Each structure stands twice: as C-alpha cells, then as structure tokens.
Length: 483
Image (cartoon, rainbow, N blue to C red; front, top):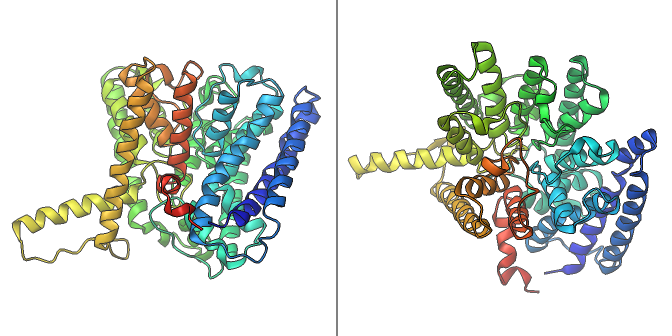
C-alpha cells in the first residue's frame, strides 16, 4: 500500500469539499444568519486537514495509483468527506454531538437521507443548503467529481472510478476516463437544472427548488421541511419529483447515450426495462390496495401517492408525501422489498440494484431447466450478450453478503431495545441508502432517538451500501495493507 498517494488524493478531495462550501456560505451571507461563522471556521478546518494530507503525500507525484490504493482512497474519501462535512453542524452548534453530526454528514454524502434533526425548519438556510449539497456531491460520486475536475493522476484514475462506481460492471462510453466523468457530470447537472426550473414553475421558491432537486437527482431525500414533500400538498410537484427520481434511478450511461445519439434506443436496455416494469407493477399493486382498504377516496389520489412512494423507495431517495407506516401491511412489506432492490447500476440509487436480481433470477431459471434437461447447455441472456457463470456467481455472492450484513447489523441494533420492525427497517433503510424506515424510524420520525452505538452501526451500513460492500469490507483484510 502506497499511503502517500492515498494521502495526496484525499488532500485534493478535502480541498474540493471545502471549496464547495462557498455556495451555502453565499446563502448564509445573503440572509445575514449566524451560520456564517460556522462556515468560515469549517473552511479553516478543511484547509488545515488538506495541508496535513498534502504534506503527507507531497513526494507521491510520480507514484503509480494501483488497485489497492484506489480502493483505500475511495473508502477513505467518504470517511474524510463526512468528517469535513460535519464541521458546519458542530461548529455552529446545530448538531453539537460528534456522533450525531458525523451521522448526518455521512447520511448526506452517501445519499441516504436519514436524519437526527427533529426540527429542520429552525435551522438556518445556509446549513440546510449545505445539508442538501452533500447529497448532490455524493450522488454522482465525489470521487468522480475529483476525477472530472482534477485529473492529476492521469489514466490511472480509472482504478478510482471502478472502485467508486455503483453496480456490478462499468461500461466505458469514452476512451478517456476523465472525459467520461465530465460527461456524466454534465448530464447530472443538466438534470438538476431542468428539475429546478420545473419546480420553480410549480410555485416553489428558488431556494427550496434547489434543495429538493439536489436531493432528488442524488436520490438522497433531505428536505427543508419537517413534513418533507408533503408540505407542499401539490400533485404537480409530486409528479415532477417522481419523474426526476425515476430518471435518477436509471443508469446515467443510458441518458448519456440517448443524448449523444439523439435517440431513445438506449432505453431498450434489459435492466432499464426490468426497472420500469417493476416500478409500474408495484405502483398498480399499492394503488389497488390503497383503494381497496379505503385509504384514499379516489383513483387519482391513490395513484399519485402510490407512484411517489414507490419511486421514492426503489430509487432509495426517501422523500415522503404520506406516512406509509400507517398504510396496510402488504404495502409496507412491498416497499421494504423495494428498498432492497434499488435502482439500476450506474445510477445514483443505492441498494442491491436491479441487474443483480435479474442475473440471479435468470440463473435460477437456468438451473431449473437443467434439472429437467441435465445435458442441455442453457445460456443466460443479459442485455446484448450472455451473462457468464462468474457474473451469476458474483451477483449471488453480493446478495448473500448484503443479507448477512443486514442480519448482523439488525442483531446489533436490537441490543439497544429496538423492536424487530424498527431494527429490520432501520438497517435496511441505511444499508440501502433509503433514509426512512418503519415504526420508530418511519417517514414522520427520525434517528434522533437511536443510541450512539446504533448510530455508528447505521453509519457503517450507509458507507457499505454506498460503496457496494466489498470496497469497505476489503479494508478488513490484511492483503490490502501490505507494501
């Protein structure tokens, strides 16, 4: 392990995060609020951290970035970004406890959206904008941002991109990884701008439109209101955010290919079709149950709330327009299942990803055929080609490890006296980067009442979920630390 090159990368990352504080600071200066001091002190703290890391890695300019350094760099990127990100909360006294402040920052950068704030409406706008911005930075990936903006490591940055990029595979859409990163960020920013304009057109203020779109395109879920999106009680806003979340849960490479080719053909992608059918089927089932049980009196209302919550949950955004913890048990269980599935590979969504379930289901179907026809050679078609046995095994192993972490973490947080629904859903919500769970951590509740021990378990789960498990777990093996 070349620690110097990791330190150098982290110093660049901290400088990027610190520089981005200029945007929420501008809102604080505009309002003349008391969070100005918190941001200025946070900038000084960030510069000091970056200086220390730069000194530690100053002789690494000609060193090669290998796989081990890339994995460590990506994993520690979220750790140190959250450390710098929690400074405005702590130094301003808005979240004075380090555990809570770090939890909030990690929740933002991992686009989880779980919060310990019980009343966000008394928090200054600058702090809330920073809170929203952490999601936006973490959505496309702060590592990808650094690659796009500061390609100081040359072509070896590909290793970083692969270690950070969500999903089981990475399809290159450009011969240069820095070009690809920049193009993806342009699509990301374009979707952000379009969303802001549409929300402002629907009556939102520019400030709230920016904050909510930052959360929607990153599939984060932080809101500037205690009631989340339900505060607006607007069908137009609900459907606009539903559309933005749905697009953000799709593979951004598809959006890029569609824009460059001026064609909708990329959306014929197998995973995207699976994702679309799953969303549509879930909406119809929940809509039917809500009407059947008399939760809503009209089809229009049932469709509106079912659509929003299904898309919000499967994309792991976590916005709420209704307290779905009060909905029929069937709908709660279906939403819990969607938490685990997540969006598409290459999207800003968390959880297991549709493509893995696709591959494993097709693999299981192939095994059933082999039982009937033992000598048959059964191909597993995925996308434009076939899925190799190693891809099926990899997907199955990932799902297995995911459920093991879910089980172990649930046992851990249950030690604090949480009921089984709270324990299971809280871990699922943080490991899948969704945010709200059920019961004591439901959509109208928060994580403030959880113990410090439980919050650190959730923080670890958020990091594991955002970095696809293995990038974090490999740090606990001795091989990666060898020189």
